Image 1 (cartoon, rainbow, N blue to C red):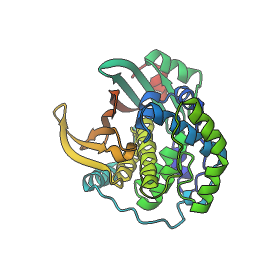
Image 2 (tube, rainbow, N blue to C red):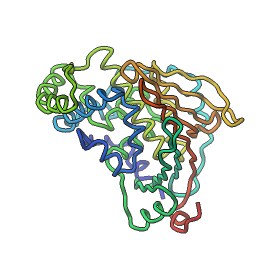
Image 3 (tube, one colour):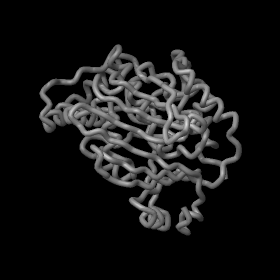
Image 4 (cartoon, rainbow, N blue to C red):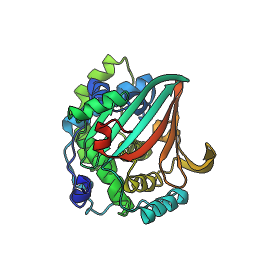
Length: 334
């Protein structure tokens, strides 16, 4: 059966607002997201940043509307690849990818913070766009048996954007991936100012609740560019998390990450095998902290991710990714 996103990749995606405000962590957990890692990846890292991010999310979820920039047919500024190693690997993956076994991608993630085991996460993303999760084999099997689908529009749009990017325009792909979550990044300055003003009350209320006294300013110039690149990094790696068993998704994510200036790529070895170490520097995270993603240099499969931020213990995730069938999951054969 072909992926739903495969059949719809030519259609302009709708913008589906994601979680916002104080509900963002609860929504992440409910959807099976590794909420701690996702918050640490956000550009506004740290205690103050978490509140600021929530405030901005409230404004965007309440006031943002779909805009033409999300459509793959609209001309956008050229965004050339900057990291040849990622582009080369993406091309190799696309060229050699044949029919995929199974009908779902399974990712088993072990997460530690400061060297302490926090959780083991089982995530199953099906070809038809369903997301099931569990803390172990038993709870994953139960989630599938009970049809506890946790996917939402954001997951769908992130995966669809990654799939499009495997062979599509990089400039258009960047817009599609960023627009998988609510934003006003690609609107005119006048429109963005209007949205910013409309959300002032909600934004200021959350800032007060978080004890943040410094008022936020509308992102423009380099700050806006960094915000866009943060969303690009976060949404792309989310797609890799959920659907990384599919080579088209991996190829698309690698091409997208290749366009971020604050990313560096080095050849490395992990467990005796060749890997690529992809580092998103401080510019992607508001000037502090970084995230280091390690992928196989032959398949692009994620191997490990390390997140750091000032004053916060390092978060480490290790991945085991495979293609499976729902039948095998139900039977416990994985």
